[in-house]
Image (cartoon, rainbow, N blue to C red; front, side, top):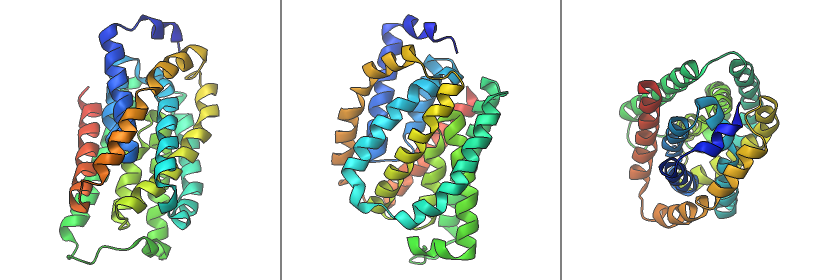
Length: 259
């Protein structure tokens, strides 16, 4: 990418990116999936492909804060089950980025996000009260198939547009995770996955010295967002938490499709 264009953003455009960075911090410690709005803002201010390289270090900063906050609540058996499928999805996403243009990337990710939200809403409406599966249920054969399917989709979407959050949110909700387990598991998941994406993104020319300088200016806005999210999550009950996650996913998917 031509990162020289990163030096020519206006004050209003930088303000929009700063707000998006603040929202990243909030999403990492409160409502996972809300950073799809950040993704859309970055893609609106910067070229879509270039935006993924700038956003990635900002997301990693948010992941570090989330891990520091919720590290004791991670469910590691779920993480180990997901990682092989996610790795496959990242490789597929890297190949996809080698030929796909911005329009194809946006349309593909938007459609996947809406599909995931639709599946989760359908599951919630058809399930009997009190019969949601617990995290341990993912050890069943159906649970393993679901983990692999969501893992590949999550790896693909996180590689091509940093949009794996909503996909994994849908998986963790469908597996019955409560708030803290959800946030702790997703925190470690995305820290590990996002760090592993760095060499791929750099190899594709999406990250370089100029993009990292812009990241340095944006990371400072992640911190207050994370602290606000940590305060807010204690005020949100489980049902509202799930509704906010699904709503954020739908909004992000629609923004990508309608741009």
